[in-house]
Length: 531
Image 1 (cartoon, rainbow, N blue to C red):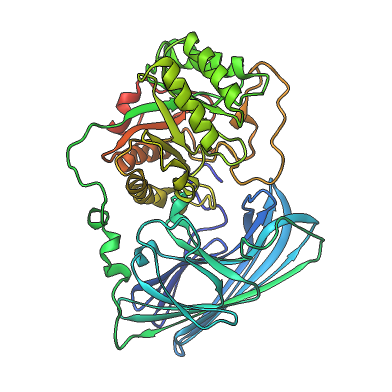
Image 2: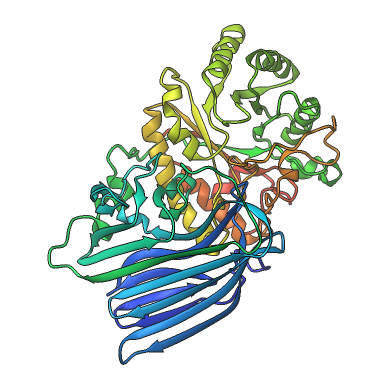
């Protein structure tokens, strides 16, 4: 990323218009594909995911565009590299051939070094405005099946064993054919992405897979569009695109706004601002990992961040007995607004942890606030909601826009998807309050890593802890005016009836809340904001 907020660093967008087609070349991505003015795909891109599901950074080496308006036709070639932390792992080439009503994208990749991958290949992004639209899925051997792009965010894959799709949107018949691997679809709104995603290498296949240098990958996607004689309902005209019309969506115009909280800072202690600069006077959310030697230091640092305000303590543990003892200790140390607990592997509140939280309420009284759910993405809450069937208290999940992509479009479009997410979460909560957050620009931990968690040996937080040691957890634009505006917009998007609190970024440090200058009114309740 460059100094410009969420700038797509490869090169400026290039618009290509050929006959009825229009699309944007955004780095190595073929984006915003329209036919006769109707959006048919969000994007076609080539993606490399390593053994921890980290998405590789792509660098365009060269790009050539040949357009013949008289035919109409076009040929586009994109050569690019994929790598991690500046080290390339793969070279690939995209060849796009456009002829009349058909676009064919051929992708060939070759690994340049040995590494472990969870997935490599083409992805097709479908616009979220297709929610409610019927589509047909073609399969490898089975007969075609009928589906509908989900209105409420789908916890699991809407389509599997995919070799092609067909649907109609605003009078345009759309057909997508896929080759070179197995494909399936997921609802990326779970992670606040503005898309349904069809990707290669089904999750049912084992991962990670070790690859040698020189391993070749060859996949293709063919998109065919034309006018429809009998438009089907849905698409960009679907009521599902209007959140106020979603069945069961919050609609009460007047409600108590959520409490704004901050996340405890995890940066090295020497970077801590003076006490005056930290006078936020809002609850501080902190996530001690029970069993680590620094639990006391993490809680003490959070107390300093809070400056007398209460803590919202979410313990990470799989040991109910250890949790009960930790709750007793933290309640004796100062004001606490809320207690939660999450398993370190699944990142959700297991039934055993729920029982321990109920026991804490029984021991300390009904005034003890408790919360269950997930410390990870809405995805995990969506997929495990049955775990909380007998829980009548608040639920929680966190929000981050850059799980799959760091582009400018991804970050900005995630705000609208946050409203979809919180509306879907409200439906799942069925009247139970929601505590949303932390809301962070980058993931503060890797919820899907296959690598072992980093071992903590230091009982202090002198060098920092948690997110301080997570690769890619710090966004270079964290303290920009654009980030300040993004956080303010996120608060507005997440402020719906039933949301009791929204926790934002860390109280200070490289992952801290942006400076107050340029921040909208939604941040005023946070108090003085310090870099």
